[in-house]
Image: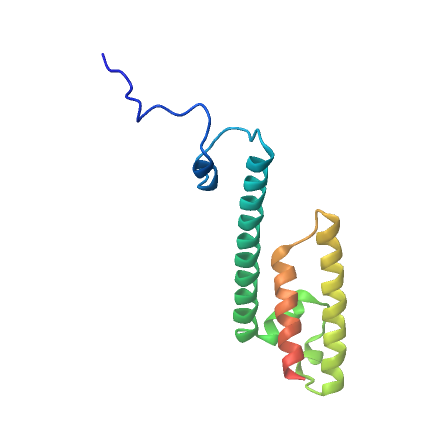
Amino acid sequence: MSSLSPSVMVPAVAQPTDLENGMTNRHPNSEAERAIQQRRRSNLEQVFREAAASALADARRAGVAAYDRARALPRLIAIDPHELRDDEPDHRRRIVARLSSALREERRRGIAGHWAYDLNRHLALTQALAAEDRSL
């Protein structure tokens, strides 16, 4: 027969230090408990948002560095092979305008929750647009 010692038993009411350390698994009963949990949740959300933004920025930079115009543009926008070889600034501006338009459309699909939205295409469009802007 084993009995639980008082040090192993869970207290009926969580102590304020336990709440601050996140050691409670019950519903908050007081305003102070709810405020602490809300603050903790908002801090975690902020950390996750910053981490996601940093990861996307890193992916974008890597994509811009590895950008292959002849391979990427035909997959993203309707473009003829002879248009790819044309390196004039005026022609590049038209390509940037087409990429901007395609990116706007992709953003609209994402915001609307459309079934055709593709995060990889969205990222590829941002990378291509940044690389084409850089080359102007």
